[in-house]
Amino acid sequence: MKKTLVALSFGVITSLSSFAALAVQADNISVENPFAREVPPTAPASASFMTLKNASGKDINLVQAHSEVARAVELHTHINDGGVMRMRQIDKITIPANGTTELKPGGLHIMLIGPHNPIKVGQTVTVDLEFADGSHKKVDMPVKSFMGMGMQNQQKGQHRCGSGMH
Image (tube, rainbow, N blue to C red; front, top):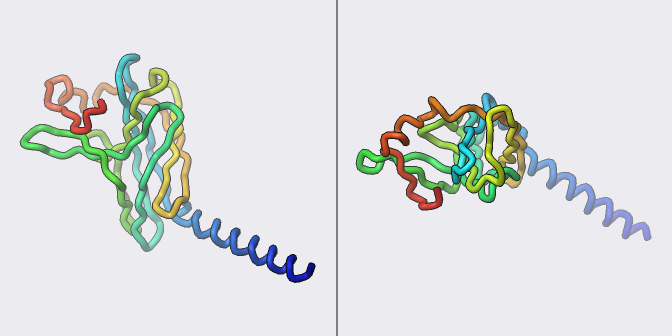
């Protein structure tokens, strides 16, 4: 009986130690100025933006994002493809050691694809950020108007998405 209790105690301590190790990356990331872009009722996608600051001495990779407001959530970037800006899904967004990564219109961003309901100004959208070590950070972000966020290029027909999903 004593051996069983010792074994169980060791298992619990090991599990708690592993859990603490998993929480390290998310704990080292702070989020500033998060917001999601408003979309018209029939729009197939929206995007969210923020500034991520890494307080640790090692690079940290954001590897996924999740949200209940959309059918799919993807990490994206913009590339200049022969003078045409195109969005591409990427595997990760790196926040450099003791550095900052900005997710902004025309650059890195998180796509909210297939919103279940229109995303409107005045709402708050919650996005769960998942880091390479499996730790998570939930971010509540207000919804802002899409005007003035690069819509000028889309209206001129210069904005193309390469994934074919938008």
